[in-house]
Image 1: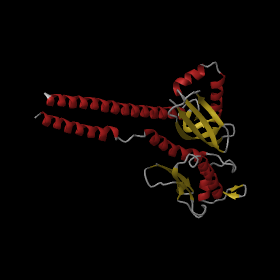
Image 2 (image 1 turned 180 degrees about the horizontal axis):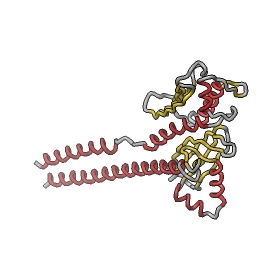
Image 3 (image 1 turned 45 degrees about the vertical axis):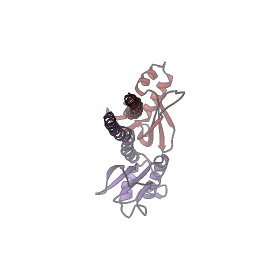
Image 4 (image 1 turned 90 degrees about the vertical axis):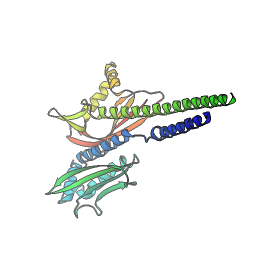
Length: 153
Length: 153
């Protein structure tokens, strides 16, 4: 009779143990810092980048993108606005996102023929899973171009 | 008699085993909570640093987010190192054990130390990068910068 009681106790203990393992020990870690910092990174990156003044007559990157999407008339020391802004963004991305080993996808959409062949698009790593995406629309001569950055996990 | 002793031995074995398991679960919970606390502190310090009114750009008394005024940044750094220590003492209560720097990425420029603490044996080093626009009020131009916040335990 006592053996039966013991067997029941062992079964109950095993069940309790399994529940503890399932819900406490194997609980996925919440990486709130990563989520928060990637969200802030994506939003701030676009804002700060668009505001940056370039070596092309102190034009901001935003102004060069606007020119690139419309007339492409700005002359940057013998270089057109499209290739100059493309090179500048590549430099910034290289010193930040690529240097930090982040997977990302940065693109400027709604481009026209004036944009460099293939458009302004930088990416690195696998971006098929979870990601933090931010967009910034820019008015350019009656149309809207969108700068988007996806920081991938 | 023998059966009762056997049952008692098994019972005490289960009690000891259960207690050991409980201690392990508690330890794992403490570690998790500690890590979460460290992560939250890293977020808190990064947020405080990026929204510090002493450094933020302001135009006609309106503060601009994600923007650091280079003149304020320079003055802040000098005050922190030159004063009698009360300035540093105040900010040590705000930032704790951390290292906050602003690096001018584009155009390439210097790295400014906002706040730093000497830690002999840094543990749980967490780095957060916040892209910011750096405003130069003299030339009325913006640079692309990175506010890097390292927090320690």
